[in-house]
Every structure is written in C-alpha cells, then in structure tokens.
Length: 344
Image 1 (cartoon, rainbow, N blue to C red):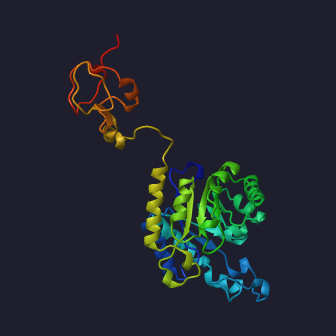
Image 2 (image 1 turned 120 degrees about the horizontal axis):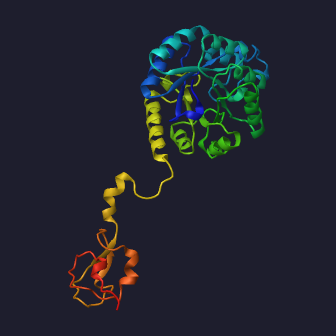
Image 3 (image 1 turned 180 degrees about the horizontal axis):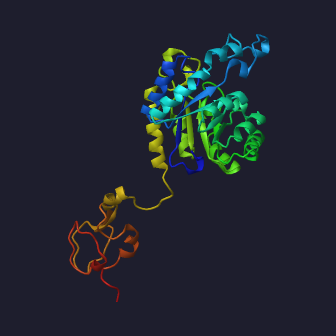
C-alpha cells in the first residue's frame, strides 16, 4: 500500500478528469500515454450529474465561467462524468501498463463502487473538503487519502484532517491548491507547503491548475511530496478540462524537470562535491611573479594572489609581505612555506 510518508520521490499524478470526452478508447490511451510520460498514477473522478447536483436551471445552478458558462451544473457534469462501467476495464489497462489508477470520490455511492474494485487510494476534491461526513466515510476504508485544500481556511483544513484521523485514516496527504481554472501563479503562495506540512504533520503536495510546469517544479523545491496535473492528449480536442491541461510532451517535460529538481534540492551540504574536486586547482593562491633572490623581501610587486592553487592560500599574504626569501625563487613558482625565511 502506498505510504505518503515513505515516498522516495515525488508522486506524480496525471489527472484525466473529463479529458476522455466520454470516449473509452481515449481514456485508455490517456492511461498508456501517462505511463509513457513517466507519471506514477492516473486519476479519474467518480460521480454522475445526479450525485453532484440536481437538474435545475434556476440562477443558483447556472455556471458563470469563460469556458464552462451558458449551461447548468447538471448539464456540465453530465458531459464531464466518467461512466462507472468503465472502471473495471480501465483498472486492468492501468495494471497492464504498470501505473496506479485511482479516483476522486464524491459521495457514498461512488466510494462503495470504487471499494468493490478495491481502489488503492482515494482523493477528496477541494470543493468536497467541507463535506466532513464524506471524508469520514472514505477514511473508514483504511485506504490512503489525498485531500485538496483549494479555498479552504486553516480551520477547515484542520477539521478535515481531524475528521479523517478520528475515522481511522493513518495515511493522509494534503495538496496545496488554487481552485480556479486556470489558476494564476501569483495566487499559488507555495510557501504554504512547508508551513502546512509542519502545521498538520502530514506530507503536502500540489494540485496545480496553472498553465505550464514551472509552478509544479517550484513546489517540489519547497518539499512537495505529490504533484497532480490535469492531462489531455491534445487541447484542440476541447474536452471540459482540456484548456488548462498539459499535453503529453508537456507532461513528459514536467516529469523530467521534477526529477531534476529533486536531485538539485538534495541535502544540506558545505564543501567540495565530487564533481568539484577537479576544479579546486583553479582557486587562487600565492605565486612568485618576479624573480626573487635569497634574502630579498616579499612585496606586492614580486608575489601575488593568482590562479591556480598550487601555492599558499591567499589569506597568508599579509603574513608573508615584508618577510625574506629563504632561497632564490623564479617567476611563475608557487610560494611554499619553505620559501619563507624563518624569523630569528
């Protein structure tokens, strides 16, 4: 079972969401392509229009959004949902392609349906973070649980985490998220990631709705344990979430950049790295720059701090100036301690 606290690398999720366009073959292709791009998991969403809302065209239910507007919530969700009958086959495809498949659940019926398929973990979306009875029901499965925190106050996150823990969840991760589509990078406030990790004592990642991969990579440098990114085969397909999703070449680049960022973050370290060992020779040191006779004083004219580093370290220059040469020295010779006459 996946344990978020034991992750050796960032867990990268390709969020398929509605990008299958209710075409099973496209859903299967998205799973395969996500694996080819290096993602660790693919995520679907388990709901129907009826489990999320009601079929009503009252002003309260009309969508006001540049991409999704002009329809009711019911109409949008009816177009975007994943047919539940697909999941057994999708899970087999994921297993064959050696990639984890799991789902966001939205009500008890979706939890029960996914439990019948023994899903390995679950996700709570930002909009459901305040649905504490749902969180309690999911937590009782004992499966790993990821919860997005878009729009949530500190108190609301605390209530969600406490609810999950009290219901038996021992493997919880939170995702920093801005629930706008696409999200503005200036609103991401990624410094919240380490703060949230310390505050709630759980691994924290990011659900990234910004365009591109820069924000996801930046999150990793701040300790993000999970990166979730919406994924489409092509934005030109015009699926409900396609306009803020990454295409295969972008997902592959994101994965590569995240893995590079992980290496670059490394650990606290001072001193020479293995690759720097050969470069140390190009440090500065004290060299004779004009011929010096035995007994002659060392001055700024005949010794200097220059590259490379075969001579005394530059910090000894003040101690050397005014001292006498112990022997004849030629220009271009590194200055050694033995070249300096001992004091009487």
